[in-house]
Every structure is written in structure tokens, then in C-alpha cells.
Amino acid sequence: MAKLIRKDWHLLARPVTLYIFLMDCFLFELAFWEEAAYISIITLVFVIQFVMLIASYEEKYNSHKLVGSLPATRRQVVLAKYVDGLVFALIGYLLALALALPTSLIRTGDLLQVSNFDLIGTMGAALLMLGVFYPIFYKFNKWFPAFMAAVLLEMAFFRFIPEVWLGSGDGWVFAVCFLLYGVSYYISLEFYQKKDL
Amino acid sequence: MEQTVSMQNVSKHYDGFSLKDVSLTIPRGYITGLVGPNGSGKTTLIKLIMNLIHADSGAIRVFGKSYTGNEREIKANIGFVYDEPGFYQDETVKGMKDIVAPFYDTWDERQFEQYRERFQLPLRKKIKKLSKGMKMKFSLALALSHNADFIVMDEPTSGLDPIFRRELTELLSDIMQNENKTILFSTHITAELDRIADFITYINNGEIVFSREKDDIIESFALVKGPNAVLKKALKDKLAGFRQTEVGFEGVTDQMDEVEAQFGDQLVIEKPSMEDIMFYYSGRET
Image (tube, rainbow over all chains, first blue to last red; front, top):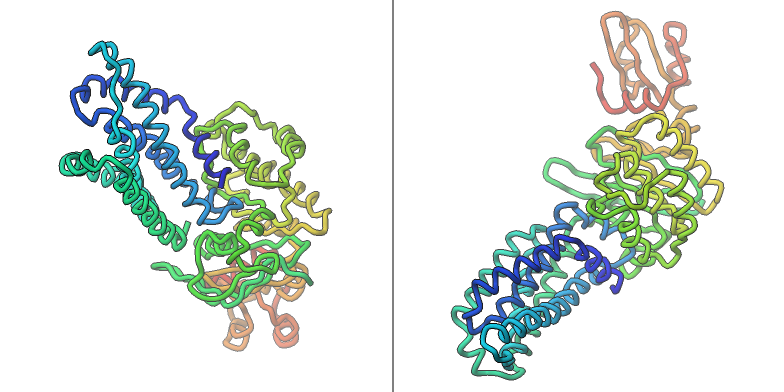
């Protein structure tokens, strides 16, 4: 499975990843600085773009056939994607933090305060988003509907949920998200194991 | 004879095409040519062998094992070459090799380098910049660099120039010096099979028409030519397929002795090529 994860990271190591990252930094500084969930929004954008870059690349070159012919089981292929998701969520958060801290210092003269919501809530939201993305991607082999569904879910989430989310603070919300992520894994696996490549 | 692949009563249904109740063995230590017209089911058969698609019914065993619980082990011992392999086109030759190589515990970097030099593959060139022939050579170099016992090749020569096609058949002959190797080679260019195949499996319209030793096929079939006046029901029944024109007919038969005994004095009987056999068996009678 480590080889499959390594493959995905290899695919991300391209100039386009850096361009998108820099563009995100610029746009989000302009657009979302005033938002309460600033770090969460940037994190989710980073995460979905990492995942989308890999998925679009695989779709474009029909690489399911290549991956399916390599010595790895379908279970390992799907599990690797879900492990990728966890790692991307963490890296996305760290990148967002790295972007937000100096910005807050320059704009307000103070360092940004990081709350429970920022860390646990953001990780949970990222897992929810990816938990929607992957099953749709494995069902239809298309990244775009999966991307749209994940983004719409997150928009709805930020519109309706933050109050409860912010109030809850600690781990149970994250635990629920992690559980849903696990359910999503089994759904994706079910789709992928039945799929003709 | 040991089998590398055995398929029993395998069926796969798609809209507009079905692979019907296929039973087939691919013997270990030989080159088996999988031949048939475009759309006959060659790629479907190969995808089933590679477990890329699932059979609706029947059993498939590779190296004597089913894929359930053995997928990794089986695929580690298969080298694959596809017409459209699904490479990441923005990667360089080196980048793509670096993605594939770690999957194989038996990867032999020295061997890959030898093939790379032999095929003159530029390490730093992106896959999308390679010609079709170069991509095929790269695919071949990957397939041959992890000491796989079973090489699966789906239309490896389609769209390639005759020089490389000849080079490839020579390379495959070299590989077969190792008696543990098995090659499955699908093509619709029958001349290649005449040169290298030990066994031929002919598939048409989703059904295996025959799967036998090549020499046995060539010996048991005959190309028959004659005037239309001879082409009566008694002869038609003995022909696997034929083509009729205003001046006469031509066809193949697998009942050579009977045809010769009954009609021999009125017909010209010759040794057929694989192409003759495939053409008339495909049912293109006019």
C-alpha cells in the first residue's frame, strides 16, 4: 500500500501543484480573510485540490488499467486513497496555518489564535468532504461530479453547521466524521471491487 | 503439460457483445498467439486473465491459483504490455519507471537499463513525447525487467513499423530460451504468429473457434480452390468457410482427406497460411 501512496505523491510532485497552491494563497488572502472559518476554508480547498489533481490525472490517462495490472489488490488501491486523504487533511491544515499566521501578524499585529474548531473541526470537515468525493469517483470514474458533490456538501456544511460545530469543540464530532469516513471507504471498496477496469 | 492459465466455461456479457462459455488453457513454456478479427473478444479475454474485469460465470486460474486471495502474488509474476497501457503521460520515462518499479520485489534495474539502451529510450523524455513505437518499447522494457514468468501482450504491434515488429518477434524468441516463461500475444496480424507462436487460439465473435498447436493447425487445414461447378452441397458441408467469385471459389477445410478423396481431381489443394484460415473461419463467405 505504501507504494500506491508513493505513486500518488509522485503524481502531485509537478509544477501545476505549486501554481495552484500559490494561486490559492493569493485568492484566499483577498476573499476569505474576514471569514471566521478562514483556516478551515483554505484547508479544505487545499485538500480537495490535491485529491482532484490526482483523480483528474488518473481519469485523463485511464490509469485504472495500469494500476489494476500492478501487483496490488483493489482493497489496497482504495485504502491507499483513504490514507492519502488523512495525510492531505493534515498537510492542508498545516499549509493553511503557515499561510494564516504571518498574514495575521501583518494585518492585525497579533498572531492568529488557533481554536479547537480550527484543528478538530477542520480535520472532520475534510474527512466528510473526501468521504463524499471518493465513492462518487469510484462509482462513475469521473472526478468532476465527485468534486462538485464534495464542494456543495462543504458549502452547505459551512452554511448550516458551524454553530453546533463550534459549540461542540472536542472530539466527538471528529469521531463521527472519522466513522463516516470509514463507512465511505467500504462504499468505495464495494464500487471498485465490482468495477470493470 | 503444465498450464499457466486455465479458463473454464467463462462468460462475460456486455451490451452488444458477449464472450460465450470460453474454456481455454495456455501452456507453460510456450508462446500462445491469440488471434481474431477486431472486436472478436481478444482484449476482453486478456482483461479477464488480468482480473481487470470480472467474469459473469466460470473459473479462471493463473499459475494454478484463483485471484481470490492471490492477486498480488499472481500479478507480481506477470509482465503486461497493452496497446493503451494507461501511463501517466506527463511523467518522464524515468518518472514512470520510478512509479512502476517499486511494486515489484524482483525488479532488476540492470536489466531495465539494458533494455532501455537496446530500445534507445531517453530517460528524461516525457511519455507523451514518445512515438507509439517508443511507448511500446518502454512498456516492453517495464514488463521484462522484473523476471516475470508470464508476459501478456495485447496487440503489442498494432500501428508499429515492420522493422520493430520483426525486432519484437526476435526478442520474444530470445525470451523463450528460458523454458519457464510463457507468452500470450494477441494480434490480428497473423504473419507474426506464423513466425513465433507455438500455439494458436482463434477467437471470433466471442467464441473460441480453436485452440491448438500451430503446426497441427497448419497440417490439418487445407486451402481449396476450384471452379464453381464443383461447389455443391456435399463440398460446402466440408468447408469451414469459402469465398465465391464469378470464376471460381476458394476456401479452407479441416477435412482434407475426405475432400481430396471425393473431389481431389477437380480441385487445387494447397497448404494454407494462418491468414487464410482466419479469413475463411471468420465467416466472410460471398
